[in-house]
Image 1 (cartoon, rainbow, N blue to C red):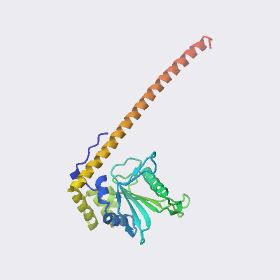
Image 2: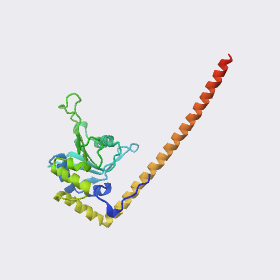
Image 3: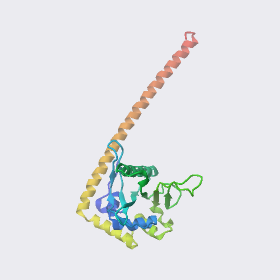
Image 4: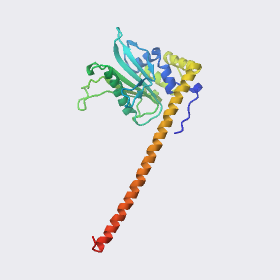
Length: 267
């Protein structure tokens, strides 16, 4: 899988590395979350860029782009937010959102939380492509009773998908301003100017350059491993197909011989 890496100086906000670096600043993440979710947030802990969760040594882990928790007046945990930048439609994003929710809940329960104590979780995907194909700019989901949508399941999980390439269709100006910036890289408001200022600062920071090189090497290594696994799987599938063809041919020969034996009354 040949993938051309983006030069460091050309990184924009839609690059996963740059997005994680910029949104790891709570003064960036807090107004963004309040705007796109319509919530009033008391206080945010420092966001965690590229947060990794592994609930078991033998299970598949997850790496969030940006993960952040809201705290109350006494420092108590209130709500959690996972923010993901997604430039490609990989055709499994809704199921990935389901997996991210499961991993976050598993981590909380492994730390001793009870089911009844699980906090609100908001998963946000910022997508370039309309992954649902319905022509909308915003899709919001929560679990409702099938026959009566007035009845909420009450599991406190919310999944939100913003299609920023369709920013012109967003009615709410505060949301549209962010989506327009993601789509065009043009900052036209104080909030997006703050983001753009950080992007430009990171583009000139030598320490960030080193971090990006390390991050890119990790990504390249994962791609190489994925390619190797795919090659092994393809080879195994080919061998299995060849073996099946041989078995089919052998069965056909047996059937033909049995037919001839029956014709001669020998079977």
